[in-house]
Image (cartoon, rainbow, N blue to C red; front, side, top):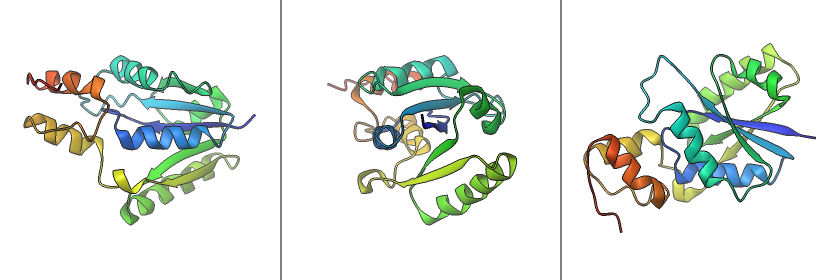
Length: 164
């Protein structure tokens, strides 16, 4: 069974993330969404909230599981018996960074393969950082994230908007 992990902070989950999740779930037997708990980084959503949001959006994908980890990805991969890392690429600058990480992971464990999926053109500009920037000023984020998350995101900035 081919088990892959799609790691990230997913703070918040975007349409770009969902695109990569849906596409990669079709090419592996089991896909684990690994939500990184990075204590050095201040997240908008708690780890539990991020895991819950991803579970909410992936219930229709039977081979997708959601977990969380801290520390090295290669160590978490051993725990879940994954040998494939899925990474989304938006631009050339993403590739340079991701290539270094992929090579370092391979040095740590030569059984690990990294698969790069190019982002759907509709989401090539999109990042969680952009979502947070727009939301913090009350901007329209309806084209960035699923509708059921919009009010939750604005609430983190104490903004009340009628999104319907």
